[in-house]
Image 1 (spheres, rainbow, N blue to C red):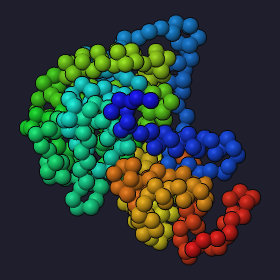
Image 2: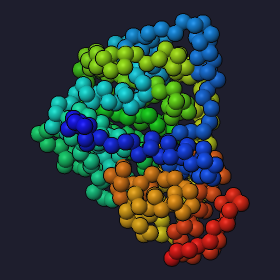
Image 3: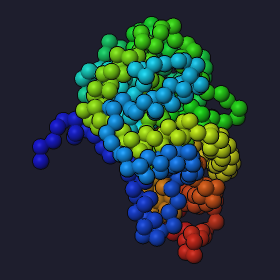
Image 4: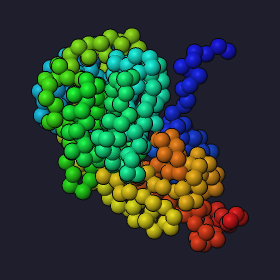
Length: 405
């Protein structure tokens, strides 16, 4: 079978593949614990569900404009004013089928084949393949000091004649690191000075801990929005626990949004009107669900940190936000894919290999599930890896006996 050169380089999303594997194991009745997921367990806001139900009952489920229905764009404009202190026009906004599609369309809009897009490492698993889908090249910028907190120099050193764009995801998936205000200010100024596009992946910006406040990139721009190359991406999936609704958006210069809308119009047309109405309900409705989720995640993070810190051989940096931690297990196994397979085979705990995020020897662990899953999952992992653990472990009614060293 003949495939395109781009198609040959694209692999399945490892996080989506893990979700499918977990579903298959659970369907078989296996007591699997999924610590690799990126999906909060809380319910979607009631206002989102009611908005969808009302439209569904009307039977008027029709095509929508490629850039989103007026009601959703109005809600996004209000959201942008509230959280980014920037009043934008409807022509500055495009709704999409999730933040991932908004980012993909943005990259297709600005990248030519062989041009480069830079992003700090560890990075979200999709960035390299999204660049490949544009015929472009993703360039990972690993902080030179060995932390999860990049400096401008880490970005600057990788900028060359082919560099066209920078992606910043803060708080970061997978590390949970929230980049400093100084770094965000420096990156914004640097991209403006070098005439680079800057894509701010802000999907976790309200899920932050320890009294931190969201950082607003617009505070550091010197250009009006319609003269700027800053593209802000956000959505309802994480903060409103609406992963399955697949609604995100981009805010950018009118000319950029016009071209992005043209591309999206040929790809998928507009997002489903039902799902857009759900997003309207969430954005305009009571906001207590966001804070409730944030508090729950902060508590879950503390429990996971306590468990991991008692795990000899594991090194972990306390996350500032999101619902992930990125733990160094290289003392046990430097090949993270091998380690992840070992844990699912031995103790039925799903994790995401760090190699998928640009750092081998690490595992991404999620704390957005139940406390019971966090505590039992880490206990199983410790039993499988720590030679000082007891010889026996119960998973449900089944007793496992250590048969390896």
